[in-house]
Length: 525
Image (cartoon, rainbow, N blue to C red):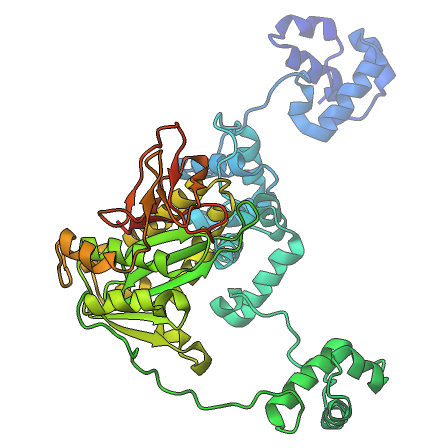
């Protein structure tokens, strides 16, 4: 078959540019009987164009004759990707955009049970747009409240197809840590995710029997030496001071011959309190405490009367000294309101065992039971414990007072607080509410009328006269009540406050021994 020579006549039948390009290079490809330059002369075309078309046809076939900007669409032979897979890829892309394509294929197969190769994953990943909501919250490794849950999250992501790099980037934890928990889970399963002690299982031992024996003999030769001196005498650099201290402590537990070691004694069983009240107002306890601060250079006293059954503070007073007249003031105030008790427990101080106090107790049919502190009986007075409560609870407030009036107000506030707050003893005994005033209730002791109380207390009072200003005097000594404090003093009705004197000054009868303020007595509630 010979090629048509007249190329110009043949052009009249072309309907497409591709046909023209094919006819230009066809004789060269099929017959190979002429060169590109000769065919260029026949077709009135540039030789380089003929060579280009020939080269593209041999490389791509007929597709090489189409223009370069032409898009070739091949018919798809694969199935349509499920919507679930596309949504999962979008969710993963919103969470983290550093996944590898093989890693995404593993995750899709775990999540959607659908297999895709990495090339298809790449195409779908590049075609999917970044979601508007941004990165989804997953939580970091260190944000979990429990370490076990954080480690379990690492294992879950790993077995869902995530690689260590992605887990490290998303959870903000180092890759060695991720590898550690994966390795421990594979070896010990879920038990490997629990916390474990980092202490060595077999630490180096420095305490051996020869060292213990050597340290045992040194304190016997030097009884008052501490661990540093023993370490210095030991002269062993490989043993630390703390190690010597531990050996000394161990020797004290093992050997009885170590100096200054307290002997273990059997603890005696708890015994009931010798003055445990069976009913209200059976036992009253009275005691005084010298305060730790001073007003005008003098340390005052706090004297309180306590009911032994309910632990209620019935009355109290502040005074510059612990004297019998202060005791009588407190006792009178309590008896006037609650009646008289059966027994009065106090220490052997003169303020509680004087003739005046003893006479009043006898007239009130109250049996005194003074305690001897030299015989170790101080613990029997319940006010000892309550003064410790006063020291811990209100000493700071007492130290802030600058006047006797403030001192008295703070003292009243302490008694009110103690009477209206819960006590641990009543809580253990099942009282509800465990409050002293509630436990006491409306119980009264042996009642006396105010006139009877006045007669029984009046014999203990000192003789008194009234001066030209209407003030009561004792031995011709007038003591002014400083800074406006209302004091109690002996009078016709026994222990009642005095009024302002005609000269405009507040004065009251005070014992000459009182230095800076008088006593103010108040009930506990």
